[in-house]
Amino acid sequence: MRKLMNELMKYRRQFVDLLVGVPNYERYVEHMKTHHSGAPIKSRKEFFCEAQEARYNGKGGKVSRCC
Image 1 (cartoon, one colour):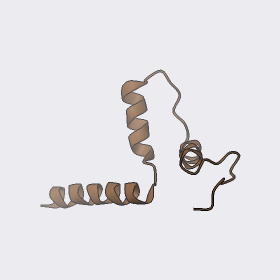
Image 2 (cartoon, one colour; image 1 turned 60 degrees about the vertical axis):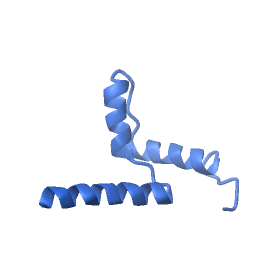
Image 3 (tube, rainbow, N blue to C red; image 1 turned 180 degrees about the horizontal axis):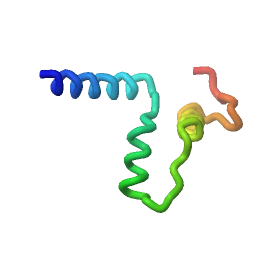
Image 4 (cartoon, rainbow, N blue to C red; image 1 turned 90 degrees about the horizontal axis):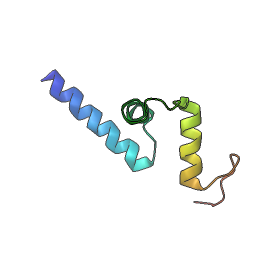
């Protein structure tokens, strides 16, 4: 029962993160280790900044649109 609840909470957290646009760093690290083992893995901060720039089209930390 506990395992099922933990699994449901994991999927709930993933759903909410996708809903609000928060990138999943742990999934990124897992993907890099599995598919790109020789490539360097970005820090959590680098990963988040790059995801924010991609989402909001920002350059140098500036958001280029209002919403």
